[in-house]
Length: 174
Image (cartoon, rainbow, N blue to C red):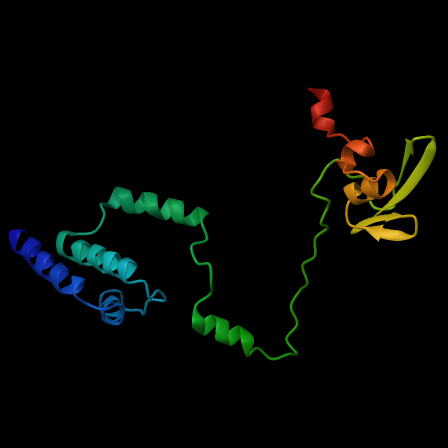
C-alpha cells in the first residue's frame, strides 16, 4: 500500500509538468479512449482519479450499485460519439423515419387560444383585437405583444395583461 502511494505521488508530480496534449495522451492510455476535453486541469484530475482507482481499488460494490441506479435516471452524454454523429450525417436520403409531432401550447396560461377576440373599453372607445398563433392582430397590423397594443392605444407604457384584464387565474383563487 505504501509503495502504491509513492508511485501515485511520483506519477502526479510528473503529470503536473505535462502539457494538455500530453495529458490527453495519458488519458487515452488510462481510459482506452481519447478525451474530447482539452482542459488541462480537468484532464489532470481525471487521470489522477483513475491512477488512484487502479492503485487502491475502485468503489465498493454498494457504491457502484448506487451509481448505476443514479446513472439510469440521467442521460449523461450531451453529444453523440463522433462515429455515430458521422454515421447519421452520411445516412441515405431515402431512409424514412417516423415524424414525431407535438402540440405546443402557449406557455402563459393567461393568454386565450388563437382565434379569440379580446375587447377593451378605454376613454369611451371600444378596442378589439384577435389572438393569433404568434402575436395579435389589431387595427390591421400584427403586434408581438399585448403591451405593444396597449401602448398604441394609450400612448403610454402598460402591462398588456393588466390593460386587457387577463390576470392569472391561479392568483384569483388564492
